[in-house]
Length: 345
Image (tube, rainbow, N blue to C red):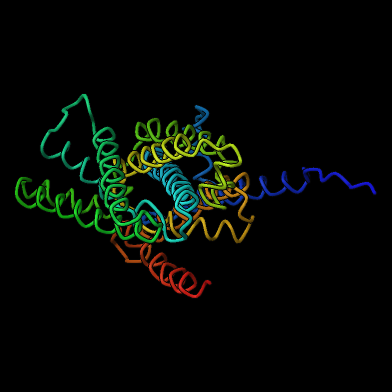
């Protein structure tokens, strides 16, 4: 009896990719037209043509600056941040086999914030290290502390989550101590607003840092998609399938730390994206990581762009920190996921 060979459904895949790109484009289009200064869509397109292709279409200098130099760079940074954090969450959930794992809950974001604040206020590392370097070292320190705490309690995934919460509180306390005792009043206000997540200061040079990191991180994760599928059956099963468990873990944890640290250094701490988006992406495309990781990247990007739009329009004449907006959606979703995890056999 012959068995039909299942071939990839390329038309369906192409349609899915096209729909994803269209949805992301629409989200960015909304982001560049909505704000305190409402700008008509034709004017926005002319401003984008001038900025991207060097055209000389009629647009006022103020509208050109708002669209191209402020809103477009902000929207693209939001897309990169949302995609990177969602990707990090999917990786951590696969490695730990825990639906509650994500950079924010495991304390990676808190450690990255502490590292960045040490560079910003204490001058640790100086210009050589930079904010991104300090944030990366802080995230690596968090991972080391979480691993140490978890190993001392048996190393189960639930204990890793609890260790992450403890590490997060520790680094949050260190950050608060540095800010309240050593920062000037102006520095303290800026740092505290930045720690809640803020796209307001993003400009094009920030994208030239974030975009390569997000792209390289995504490619590294895709290279390990099959290994991540094997981790679903446990580390012993993954090792029996030929996965170099220790090496894969180290590579993917370092990649997650780098993605999180880069985004935290640029926009501050943003929670719940890495928790909620992977679950939404699994609902759309399934749990296979060859499909899940690209879906996380796109869905996370769209979610963060729209969240940034909401941060500008929810309160008139005021821009909310992006971390507040993501928490408004993420906290109820976290409660639902926690409830479902407790009911699971």
